[in-house]
Length: 101
Image (cartoon, rainbow, N blue to C red; front, side):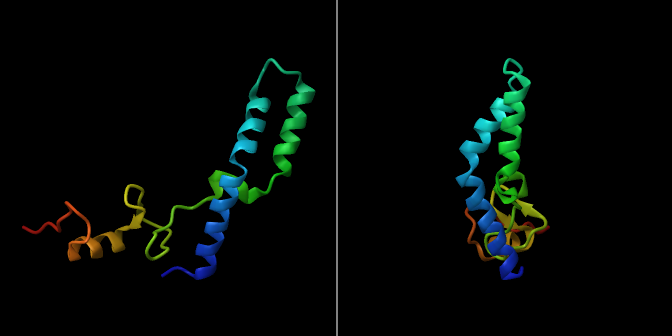
């Protein structure tokens, strides 16, 4: 089980990234537009830099929904390999069976 503070920090980052997503996208469009004057693009870049760092989507870490584990997660299930195997063995995931031969 991951530390609760790490999991909560990641949740905070998710909320911030959702909150600032539109503003960040608009500023990025301005900075990439070659038709605009360079001063206007530079001002947009400065405004983008003033936004909170944790509002960037890149800083969000994929963590297991069950245990909070930060490594070896399956995106499709939003679970770590350990939690996925436990639930599959219990038959809690439809269509998934533990293989044995």
